[in-house]
Length: 89
Image 1 (cartoon, rainbow, N blue to C red):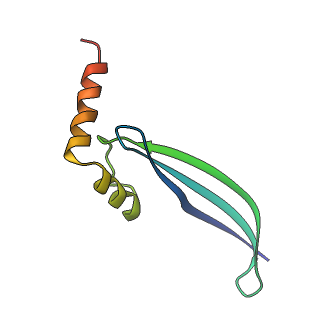
Image 2: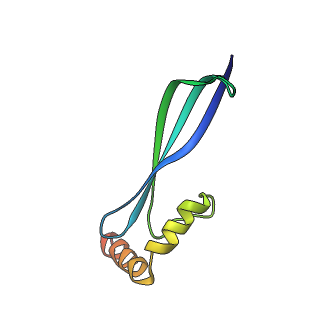
């Protein structure tokens, strides 16, 4: 029997006024064979959040497409205005 490690983006959410994109990545360890099927041994999660000023060049094509769709110029400007208002003078 072989052990297989699989990493998948299993949840992508858009949250909040400034359209933050949350990406949950699952790491799954399975045991078995392709012919007989696999049994999942463990699953762990990692989550990261992208804001409208984030560099998304290292993200998957799916995440980039979602970010580009929801981060309109208005959303980006609203995020920039909030960042400026929140920063100390």
